[in-house]
Length: 72
Image 1 (spheres, rainbow, N blue to C red):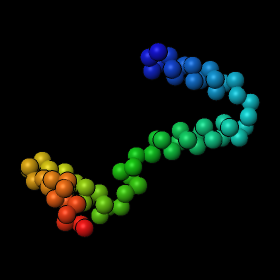
Image 2: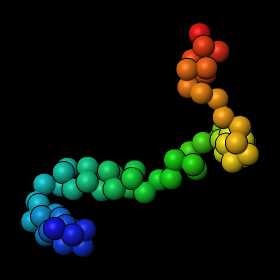
Image 3: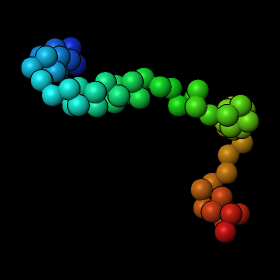
């Protein structure tokens, strides 16, 4: 089943639901899924991530085991 067919089937199921509380839960779930995690980060957190991406793009990497040694 492709994604469009799945969406149509989901809408059909939702249309048949008569439980108000359940509909509210579905609505809340969908709204939460729309939120971009980036917007929930603070500016310093966003800057730190961008800095890390720039370093990775420049080839600056640390092996995972080396990282673990540094923090322990």
